[in-house]
Image (cartoon, rainbow, N blue to C red; front, side, top):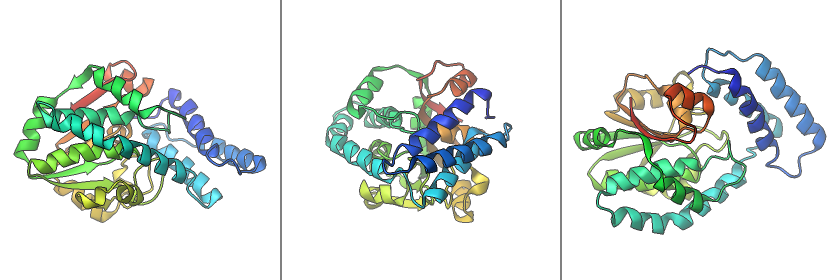
Length: 282
């Protein structure tokens, strides 16, 4: 996917959200950082996915602040989602098809993304998402692929959302699959890192590896050789989030994308309305 002119307001909105995470931040520094971001935006390569520019933006903000501005809110969202976990787990175990329910919950959990939303009622939003029709539903193919596969590489997306992924990974493990869950190599926006995996006990559930990168989504050429080896050897890849779809769609691997289409550009490219939910095979 290429960067479109409609992406530019989102670049600025994400910048504002990042700068608002710290109440103690001086106005002068906020203004300097905003000017730096505007300078970065002027140099955008519109032949690349939006994740490339967004990575440079958030890297600049972290470097100037000397810290991760999203650290606290990521932890908060993990805690909120963990409080919902017992109820969500019961939904999976009591359903006719636990794998389907777990996959549906994983997609519903993709609503947790404060890169796009400054606040959200997780419980209410997920309950609403569960009632919506999945616009692209390749579940039958997904289920067959899971049953035929021994090892699965699972690309995680956001904090908070990781708890919903945990439900699906638990179900994959219950079906006898070996799962490697992938986190980012270092903090960027609200993307999952090893700290989030530890906080939500994902590290106690399955093998967790990092991709060696601080890039938004999964920009393969910026990941570590170790992760690239995991990626190339994977029998099946489950990819969470719209951003991962933008950066690895068409990668040649058997991949299933679970996400909500949150912006007009991606939705238009898919021929769907914004907010559509997808379980889409590559």
